[in-house]
Amino acid sequence: MSIVFGLCYAFGIGISDFLGGLATRRAQALTVVVGMLIAGVLSLTALSLVVPSEFAFDDVMLGAASGLTVGFALMSMFHGLALSSPAVVSPTAALVSTVIPIVYDVATGGSVEGLVIVGVAVGLVGIVLASISPGPTSATKTGLFWGLMAGLCFGSALTFLAGTSEASGVWPALSQRSMGLIVLALVATRRGVPRFPQLGIRLTTLGSGIAGGLAVAAFALGAQRGSITQVAVTGATFPAVTAGLAAVFRLHPLRWWQVAGIGACISGVALMAVA
Image 1 (tube, rainbow, N blue to C red):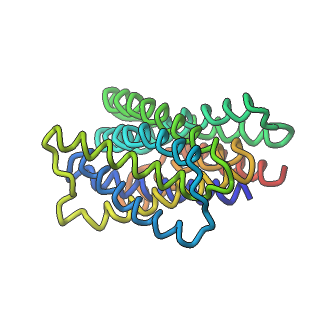
Image 2: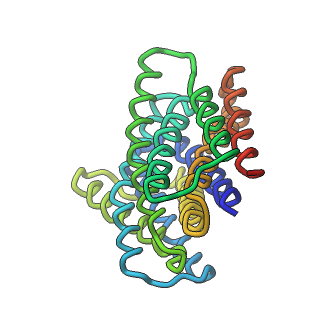
């Protein structure tokens, strides 16, 4: 079950990143992220009516703490996507954000053995391979920097979610998106940045926010019910989705080692699935 939730997270974040990257080419990253968070809050509110979830104060506070970092993670991610390549930014963020929950899982007594260890190793190698993208040095360095910043923030946010109880369901994900929205709406107001995307990109922003919100819910539910490590590593394959969408819809070239890296990510997930 952890693998299934991890794959849902990967597809959701991959789609969200692709759509968000398109939107940030036509509007400021902060404006796009605020719009995404609004869509995320609405979608998660609807999901909370379907998925059994109890309002547990401690878990909601953990979700809120997650929200303090996730907004800045999204800003870093989409700013990097606007300035560099998804093949650089997304895998870097995925690698860094995966390591932090794994360390937390092991430190809190999680079991990582046998084929799971092999799957984790293969998956992480695949992420690194997929991140190697030729191009202007400045663009590559810029992508790596913003990918690192996003990864540190995302990793912290996911670790907070991983500490919530199963009974709380999607409430932590909803409080995360809500807190992120409050923080970044205040930042946008202070900077005089528009808080709503322009008409031409609203649907793109809406789709990105819904996909991202549902993905966060999938991570929370998976971590509550199974292995944090398996959810984190499986979810970290989202760059394969982003890169695939970019290759199909934006004709963004994929090099042979990037394809090999994506294959390694898939192999890593398969190994964990049969463990």
